[in-house]
Length: 270
Length: 310
Image (cartoon, rainbow over all chains, first blue to last red; front, side, top):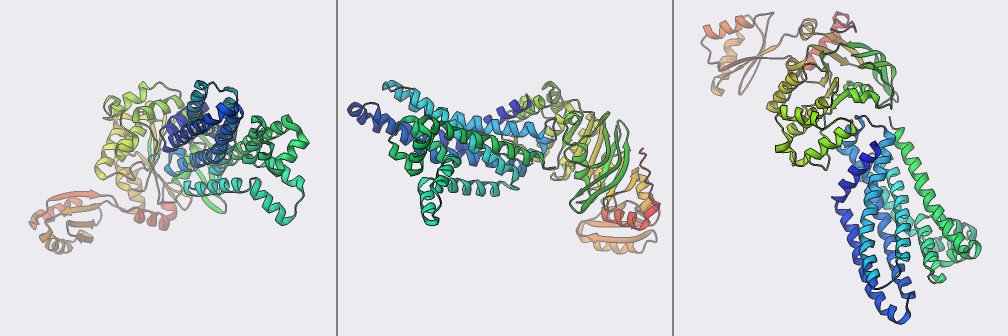
């Protein structure tokens, strides 16, 4: 009940924030552009061209969603602490566990709402053009899981940070690190230090950005060449379903573990 | 209504509160006095179960257990810093009423009594309201949600003198039956609102008694303020220095602040009249907090701290 109230307030507050509409706008514009570019290929190549369009949308999600989720969740607790809103809230009949759950639900709900707006426009255009809805629905579902993982990470940082500015700089650094330590950055690092290939494969699954990318490429049946060397090796070892399951499991594990760590940090702060 | 036994709290090596024993009866209005850093906010955090502590605390029949929320249903809280929420006043009241599991009617009617009916101000965003209005909104929520204890943590710190007096006048009117504990480092506020004073100093309870007892215990008679036209201030000060009842005197461009010997305020007024001094206003000012705390420190066991209250 309390967490639900807090979540509703969080969503309402987020819907008024600039980032919500920025996120939705990026996906509306990106999705529509990709669908329009894909239109030429559709008539010539059929469904495959939508795989490319969706891969483009996936790349967009890969960059934008973690950043939006991290920035909004990173500010959620540290910002409220700075403005006195958190102290006042905690002086009410609520527990810290409920507040943390409410913040998580509120930020995740807002990010999901902005994604639904963004993907919804793309889906509507795709439906008009007779494209199957399932791939877009799957992309939305996995993007939601990606967002949930990064909301958990951002809230964890926010629970530990003393100021909003500090939280923002940490989450921004994390975002860059997760992107930089994607397939190409990792390859360079592993070549430089000569680490075993197995470690590269494990890291590809551990990095939530990479896990999302691998899961989506495997799911959309895009060119296996797009998976990169570590992804291709994982596909060989685990098979398509195994790769999707492992990558999804990684995202869910990030969501749960970062949530647990953040809640622990927040509730022990007395 | 509020009882603390052996209450202590440390942050790392720093002892903020040490072995406090106190009791506040239902309906009492008690001021918690102390300099910044004396532990006033920490005591409130203990009462609100927001932090762990040593000893025992009971509020309105509930034993305070750190992290447990039950006691907060009985406590209305107004912080020093007005919280910033991206909401309208009506949304703010509705949200916090729902969190406290009370109908919105109570806070709404209290707000109306505070001169802020939601029909007129409810559509305004919180950040469009003045500091005094936000503090009134918090007060309306605290009082209108059925709290039996009201904690005010320096609620007027960011208000101008007019808004401060107005807020306290409203508190006196509306919270007549509510047990009130309010933190302050301003002695003039305490005169306006408190039946009794607890002085926190050096982590301990340096004084527990009425305001008059505090003045007696610290030889801190209120100071007298005499306003005079700017061009006459120097002459007024020179004349008053010659009066035998004046023990000390400070002048500025607007008037003269006088310390009198013993209970000689009326004698001073007679002197002013006999000498025909151009005084335009005469009022009392409380002694400075620093003076009171210095005296408490130097007097030591002369203070009537008994922990029994009332």
